[in-house]
Length: 224
Image 1 (tube, rainbow, N blue to C red):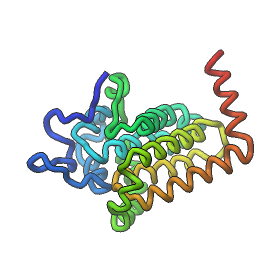
Image 2 (image 1 turned 180 degrees about the vertical axis):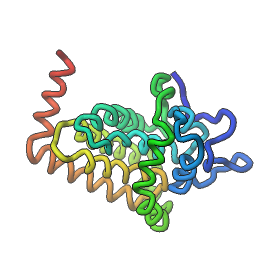
Image 3 (image 1 turned 90 degrees about the horizontal axis):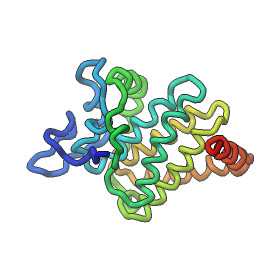
Image 4 (image 1 turned 120 degrees about the vertical axis):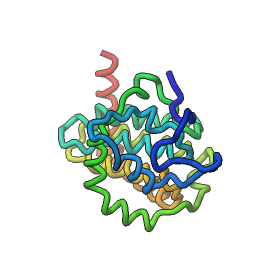
């Protein structure tokens, strides 16, 4: 087991610090982190998160949701949901930086996979970079805010894991907005995410009965 965000040498490209101080680790850092290097290079999560501070959960969540955008039924829920659950649980318990077990820290996507995804969303990301900024920190930093974010990540992660037709991209995009709010420490975007996640839970889950029935079925499959 390992705690990959503890600094051990140089930080990833774009996430360096000067004289031990914190440097912005927002969308620009995310883009710079993956745009250079060997496309076939494997990017272990432990190495990617190493040295990051405030943005570590945001980068972790960003990488975790990549499978949700693969147009193959079941892949997003099977791969992304357990990682989203891990992030949500750690935020729920008030952790300020992510912890990874060794078998997850040693795994991760190829640089080319991340680069292709960033290529598809780079234009809206660049627009968002001009709009998002650190604000309303009371919705990002305090323990109650982190706990609420954790609970809602668990909810959206559960929705992503359920076989609700045509929702992979929807819940993946919702989780992407959570990742961007954590990356940019933007409380206004986080507030929007909270409202949207609650609405999604009510509409797709409790409103239609799918969340309860599918959760029971999923629990029974795990137990058998």
